[in-house]
Image (cartoon, rainbow, N blue to C red; front, side, top):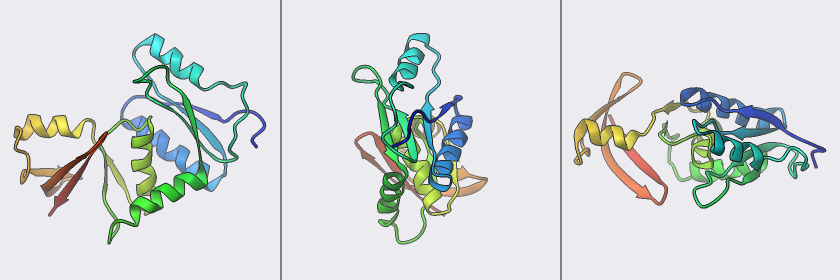
Length: 177
């Protein structure tokens, strides 16, 4: 058991948050340390709730991994500890569903577990991930409600959107060349 507290990572907004989460995941796996990811927010009261969700007086239960706040959408945010082993196992399980390494597009907030796992899956496959803020809204604005078969560019390469599947809290978007 880790005697006191983790590295505290106050996440900046946008792409910089994704980079900070990527670094924290790598450190937790390679250096066997614990990092607490604290989302940034414009509202002071919500920021205080995230800060207070991670109580520095309570010892960590994990030796390496991440402490992530829940979004607080159903009440006050709560801190969740995820060990490096659990993070790796979950990422590898999802990655095993693909016949070849997947390309990952981060279209959700990396400060919370869904976005963190997108980055972890990419890292476990030694793949790059691309950051795109609110992809579905962008696609609807750009192409209207019928965005299937539309051309998008990822790292200056053209792709065709072949399917979009909504699975609860996230979208899985398939693209082809």
